[in-house]
Length: 281
Image 1 (cartoon, rainbow, N blue to C red):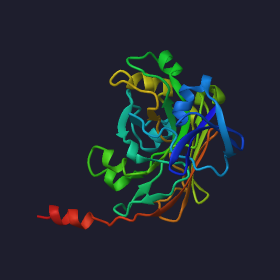
Image 2: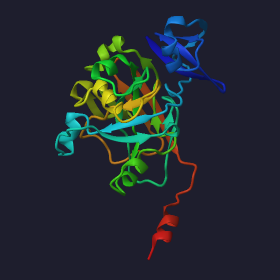
Image 3: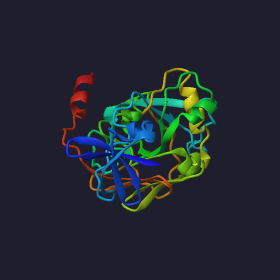
Image 4: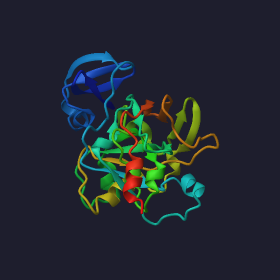
């Protein structure tokens, strides 16, 4: 099954996506539709090609992101293979829809994109086994971990370069595991104005989605709608140094779909000079 969260006016509603048809159902969002999947009622229909896709999980309790989880990316960075997953967090305010414009913050000179397989949690998990975690996956979606590299590397903690408002598209759909063989071998790509910046496969993952959920559940309680971003593949030789306004970003995963986001200009001022003045000797 394929569920989406659609924005109609100022209201969110869930839809079941069947080809070019978006069949509206009596649920508030894609996660709610998944949880109620055996008792859903159809309440309308619209064209899936022109629908306004909101983020699949509108307000997750937790958004956990994995670094260094594709073997190709580990090799690209010349790092040793990690024994344990490396985590950082995002917040609901970081997410945006899979067709929304992304305003690139003018306070950064090095903005990069990272295509990622997103895992959506379907039931509460605490100290779960890998098998239990596997059964608790509601489905998979597409995400892009847009990163401000100059902010990310200011300190040893990456958080400040990863959580800018409305910078991480999530969607367009939640696809249940049986539709795509539990995402074992799906092509992952990221293109900018038609130029491929990333190309990889989920078969290259070091830690599987179920292993990541089980590991996370040892130190916090995962809730339905929580989002796990599973890492990003390596770059191609055609990848540029930074994103700029006026580009079209296409983050695609085979069997799931694509987040297609134009980049725009940040309406807020560049405040870096103020910070430099405050920290000057």
